[in-house]
Image 1 (cartoon, rainbow, N blue to C red):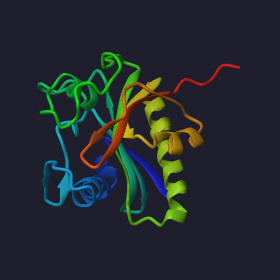
Image 2: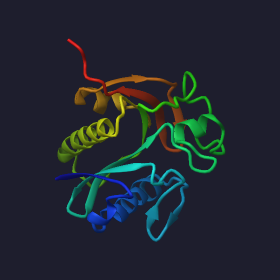
Image 3: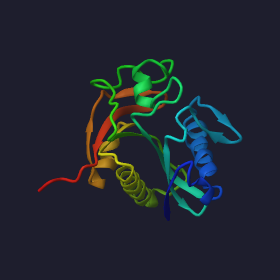
Length: 196
């Protein structure tokens, strides 16, 4: 199992991996979950897949097992910033409730959003924990390398089952809500090392 963090600056070094992340996202979000999202050439994408973002891939060569997108909360591209903030500001047409956070969406240099988190549904249950562990480790290491001290994410409401065992300092920052096919909740993940 390999871990790679891609950017527009390094994607040429990784063959089909970048396109395969978007193919895996289509499989996960459009085919499996039946979400109504943009797609073309067998790939799922949206307005946040810009040079401002980074994409973490857990993969066996070119087969993507899991992934997540990281976007700075200071990002601006046209009228969009990042998914959680744009949902709160009503820019997403109500697909995500505006009252998803307990307070204003952060816009600060040390805070990044983690979005489009997925694990390939064909991975056997016996291997899923290992894939999750690699994904969380690479996501946090990449975010720290990018200067993040905190991540915000809209994730399945079952997040304590897979974030807490990974040793992450995570807490809810919004209500549990039903979106499309399940219960979701916004969380904040503290990436600063604990002081003892």
